[in-house]
Length: 245
Ligand code: NDP
Image 1 (cartoon, helix red, strand yellow):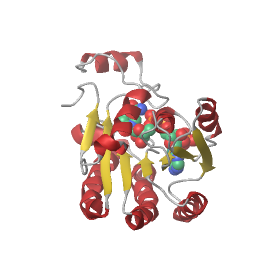
Image 2 (image 1 turned 60 degrees about the vertical axis):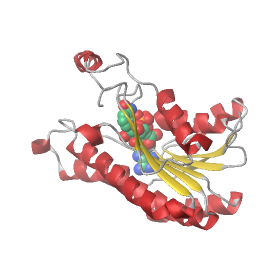
Image 3 (image 1 turned 120 degrees about the vertical axis):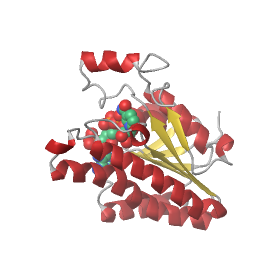
Image 4 (image 1 turned 135 degrees about the vertical axis):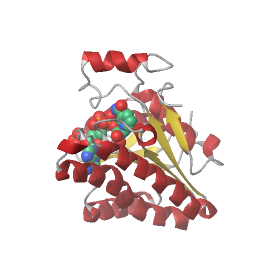
């Protein structure tokens, strides 16, 4: 398969979990994938290389505008283009609102929402000049349905959806599509924190009674950034096994 041959992709939070699966999947289509993370993403790069794909790693924090600008500039200088951006880096700091510390609110918004703004702005400028590009934000069904204990996280993920829909309207005429994927509960270190009771209750609420896999999300992203996604913009692809319909 080489639907993305010759393309350059940037994936944030690619060191593990969903970001790693997305990076692997896009690389399998022939894109060169710049795997970025606040921790060392070299394990992801090695996995892709062993699989015969092209990848490189970069370490930076999506909340640092200076670091992001330098990174985007250096990717553009090295490769001459950026075709795909996947804003995947994200965290949770779950707490009931009445107990939530202001820094728990701020950290989640800073990484999940401000981070997407900080990454997207310099990349969007490049894509506009290219007259082509695909931007995908990893939101969450929690941003659509809400979830007790996740006011901060749900606000950040709902914010990402509003951002996506607005930016799609700004960039559509320049050949750039902007979409979001809203995963349900996916088996990653983020969901390993669930207790057995929480896990059982969750499975009962799903139409497809299993947790999703990072690969389920990667398939949705691959579709949106591939040729099949060329007339799709400003949309939210819900990949939640029917948790929210
Ligand atoms: P993980 O925690 O496994 O991976 C997230 C990655 O993002 C980590 O490698 C993390 O690095 C990195 N990261 C965190 N903060 C920053 C930062 N400031 N700058 C750059 N990178 C950062 O999470 P998942 O793979 O589960 O989640 C990926 C995305 O999918 C997130 O946006 C999440 O909200 C979303 N999502 C996940 C769901 C799930 O069930 N797992 C459901 C719905 C949405 P480090 O750990 O070193 O901080």
